[in-house]
Length: 291
Length: 325
Image (cartoon, rainbow over all chains, first blue to last red; front, side, top):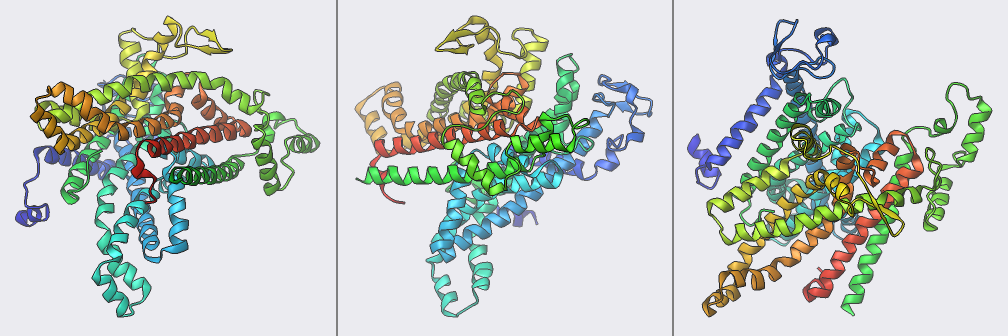
């Protein structure tokens, strides 16, 4: 089994750095999945929160019988639990939006390459339009338009990110359309949908897939930023970004733990995704230059 | 000729982008609540009061008419009057501009040379421990969410050590009818942390780009020729490699400068720096529609203009760019 995976990865053993960041990333994902089991407290349940224990420093023993390992926030929520539940929201939002954005972007890009003419012009103008503005600005405009809420955030992230996939998929698919298997498929008079879905898409998918981890990292940072600005997830279901934001006012009076630890978790999550993504991209797409 | 048609094509694209932006922005601003309640008291207002306010703000017109009126006045530089400050919206944005500009310029003045220098160094010593350290730290620097980076800068630079103030603009000097922090010592002292917050991710980005470029250029024949001629490594690096990698670096500087205006939203609201970004967030929260529109349009115009300028700059310097792709 291991040999098979190694062969898939160009027969090179994984670099130590990849292994380390991979393990860290896997731990984050696992923690997010089993958060309700391992978290000492459910930060969404007001009955488990003791308001008089707000802003306790790390290491305080709370009246719930458990240790506040990293302290509590301004409302008395255990920071460890906030991080674990926040991870869930951050990962759920970013993975969902990256997957849907990749799907939309791929389909749009491949269709633009296949149909050409006005389909190509319309799709690529839209893509140019989006790629010529910073993602944070697009996400900001989208969220202002759509209003707050988790589903809106996912939608805003999809709007902000689909164009990158579309441009990449189009350029790959354009070079694929000239290959002989496409001529064969056209000569056999296969239905258009079948040509696109069964032949063109699978052959142009690889470079765009290597983009996904990096875009997930971006999505996590974007969601956190929007939540930080108060435009993101609702206040009673804090993501990592809004937990950090809640701690901001306490930071100035020296209660650093409320924003330090959730921010560290956020940073670790994004950094490990970026490291894994970069290694994967170098493995799967040798032509790509690191930027 | 090719240059002129390239320029015209680019301008057309920029115009299209602006029209789309104004449309999206206008619709967007429309869906964030009824701004009538900013100027009438929601508890004591009679239906007549609300009606009068609606007419006064032009909100009784159909949406498409409001948009046309809006576009008509925008062309004349008139975005309407702020519901909160009772000042022309564009004037309000312009009055906040110097604060944002000096922050962004200062950050870029630090990030561009620092990033290029670090990148050249790493590219020159490809594969060494130094190179790997630089590459790895750049990934970490780019992974830092800007709001958390700003907060940690406050924690370390202001709260734990007390070296720098945690927010505000400090003393300003008046030049050309505007207040500038950059001209006073106290102002510079206040600028240190927000400038760092904006500069750090850009140093990392520029360094990665410069490193990749250096590695590519150093493998080309002409650098080998320079080496064969016996030029010193320093001279090769500064006189031959640097000019050849400057193109992508200039591009990213142009683009990131626009990006900084957008990211200033985060950094400014954390450091309570009274610039365009803070104005945008405050206005979104106060439903101050004209100001939100004016700010978003302004940031987009600057960004599109920078983009077009960078492209034209390329076309002038590098004839290959003029050919249609």
